[in-house]
Image 1: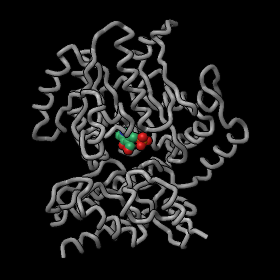
Image 2 (image 1 turned 180 degrees about the vertical axis):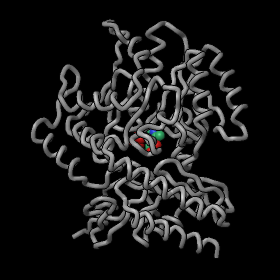
Image 3 (image 1 turned 90 degrees about the horizontal axis):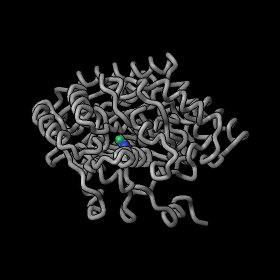
Image 4 (image 1 turned 45 degrees about the vertical axis):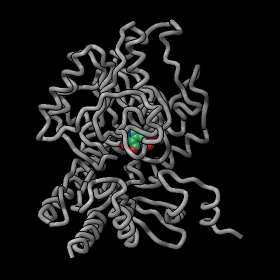
Length: 426
Ligand SMILES: Cc1ncc(COP(=O)(O)O)c(C=O)c1O
């Protein structure tokens, strides 16, 4: 009889994984809190929140209960021409957490689709009004997902190279730093004042896939202000940053400007089930308030607003706004700040940075920063051998745990990071 590992190798195509030469995947039997349990009895700390989705720990009893209860009542129904309580409650819950300029939500299935919807809405917003604006501005280094629209507005790199002929044209501005901020804003103003720009899309304050690259809210406030002044739709992709990751409920809560559209996913269900939501401002909605077919937004997915998924999201949001969760987010942030102070001067560290629950350590390596940097597999193996899941982005080692992690568990991860740095410096 074949083992699970053999069957997996034979039958399954894993994401972002070469079909030959990649190490066999770990077989996870169950998970609880911050721990993943393997079939051979190992307990691994999920220090990357399972691709940044998990915020309350695995199999949180309240989310599990909400899923089980909803599954017994209504597991799914077509969402065109039908509606249900979990979706309406979720819309209310989300809009309560967001600035008052937001007024409607559109459901889809994941981060990429929530971005696709935002881009399509921004394009149609202008078409519906008979205005000819077709350009989109994005920031170099950005990642917005793997579907074609999302790839088009993302950085052109090794991951998208084979598809480059099929991606639409986008104007990319440089990633803003303390050094180039004002020149980037000058170029941005030139672009948005051309009268041809439909939308500006950005990952607010943190470019996650680019290596947890952080930039200033002062820049983003000014960019959004300029975009608004020149009537350009602004799209905040909060797929990664949403639901407490940056220390506030949303990254836009660090700003005083409000975007027109927001893409949400990952933490929305506490990481339990897939869901994408695009939140729309009143301004966007107004351009679609018509019974004409040509002005209708013709987009939808089979599992749009799945009731079980929405119920999971409602349970997760209830946990997120609870004082205990807010204290945990603060605890992680305070720890990250202290840890940065303790490692900042180490020779193996090029730059250490944090925002909210995100800690990123850029390691000094000979070769340049890249996902394919060889240190990546060295870091991964070092930590997994010590029962910690850290999945670096090239030479960027980052730690962003589910918020339920305890002080002792945070210290355990820091200790192993310190041992790894000792080894690098030897
Ligand atoms: C900022 C951002 N947008 C979009 C996505 C795509 O989300 P998904 O993987 O759910 O399609 C990601 C995924 O990492 C992301 O970080």
